[in-house]
Image 1 (tube, rainbow, N blue to C red):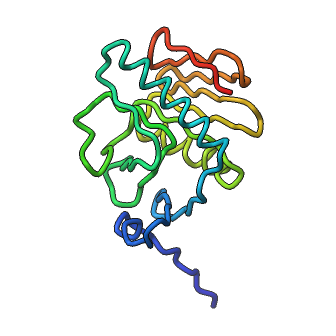
Image 2: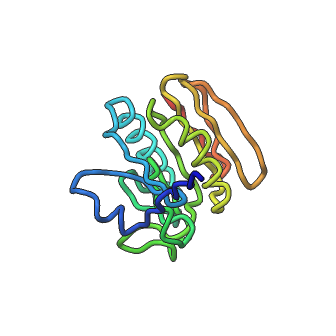
Length: 177
């Protein structure tokens, strides 16, 4: 008789026990190790972070924007921990020195070859279920941005160079390139 091997369930304690400099995310108790981001990834991340922060500041907004590495404890449990490329949090009571406890309002992930299945499927489901209001997947290989508006159940697709509209902020438009 063959026995089924039980898959090990990891917790946030395992994430914090990783060697210095090793980054990983935890989704439903499974660890996903993360490679260092490339130059294109970092350039896109910086431009998006800058544009969003400038927009919030120009409107005297109360939301805060954070770039990875920034801890997001999605479901207030010990088996889910992510570091989105960009997180926008409007309920400041979710924030403390460790990160964000609960779903950010808006998350942007910039796809790398190793993160594609996780960004397009696993995280899409996790973010929607956790209560993220809007999720952008920026794909430099496809030169495309997918915008999932979970509140209104919308999906928009934009090519790089086109104006991308945010559903979180009326009137906020950005070109992703």
